[in-house]
Length: 224
Image (cartoon, rainbow, N blue to C red):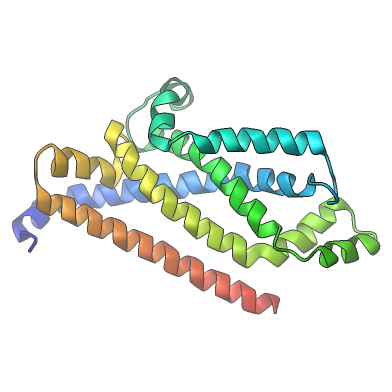
């Protein structure tokens, strides 16, 4: 059982840790999709026999994304410390953690979006082309709307992945629940506090997944 005294004593700390974790994850997911979504679209439309085929661009972008995905997040976190300091002026705290979270998530998002867009039946694209739709119109009016439920599920998966990444950021003073778990649960052997952080992380993940599933189903029904 969790000691009630521990819960009361560290309620404020856990509250701040939860807010910091949500702040990091929401901000990182937003920026990751601002960059990752266009990259995913480009990967698809530059593929051969698509609306804007470009073998060189597709190979270059795909190669860069593969290299970025190959770097474990904990190594990336440390490797880009100088860049993080340049962007936000510090390497400690929730805001500093957003930088590596975004960079780590962009290639993941790009591949998620690519997978979603490739689910579209080729005949749907060809039908739009035969009616004179431009590549931009096909992207905006056919590809994105058709795969929106899948993209939303991808957003929830990405957000949950970033919750785990944010916990890793706590290992280098990144703030949030991961930082609390390491500083108090690991270094000070306060198991009750460790358990509480795990419970909070599980609640956050369940909430994100539930919201993602709900929105995806709702949009899918509208499309039908």
